[in-house]
Length: 100
Image (tube, rainbow, N blue to C red; front, top):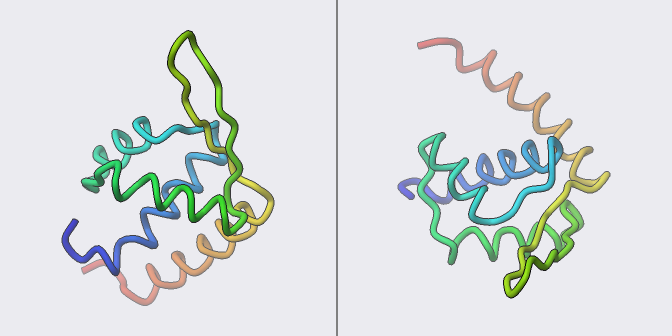
């Protein structure tokens, strides 16, 4: 992903947004991010999800279906609070950046 250092914060906000709507899992999130133009490999996304869980923004639950298992992530209150703050800051940025 070009400009990874700048866009990684936006990827995290996408993750929180979707985790606030419903439980998410890694491959679904990779596909959803691709719809928005982000190309992430599992080797990039899964450590990001693990870090967000470690930092208290997400919580996870593993569900088994036959021989396979899938880890679902949901947003925590800390994640909701952070997402709310980020939305305010994004509106401020949008106002400053204008529509060019």
